Image (cartoon, rainbow, N blue to C red; front, side, top):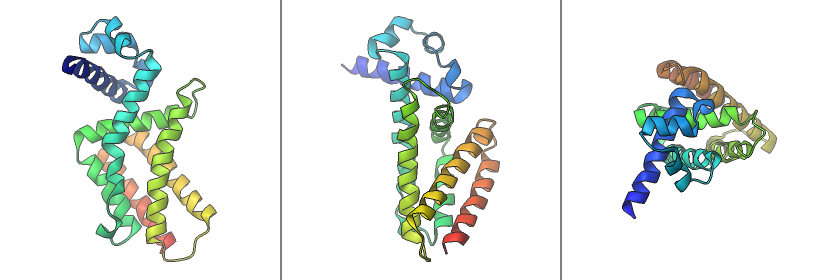
Length: 192
């Protein structure tokens, strides 16, 4: 039983690494098998198709990364500090940066995909949106309508996604953090 779990986890780890390094389009069964020194048939023993493997890889990354955003809001004085520190907590962990690249790759690519993977974007966006909305509601000092909260959250997700793909993929983690800090301060100024 442990060997089965270990093999399945190994396939997911290899898949995550390939997505982070080479992008979704290069995450094929052949490439996974080659990188893991595996036979392609073993991949389809554990996963009925490549979409199922990609889905499980994404869920693995979400479970290991996004809960950081569920920090106790009382640990921070304002939403700017909360947003900035949440991202810094991810960026400081090399493994979580890889997971974040995978999450952002799915969020970015699934805007355009027409196959079964398009629903994966909703999985990512729903989680991020909930964390952002909870944070805004906790920290807001002026009355905001639901539409305003939704607009701020959507803008944050778009900024996070766009900056992440552009900067994290090129290894510019510090630049991403600086830009996210600026975005966080702007949100903080707006809701204070």
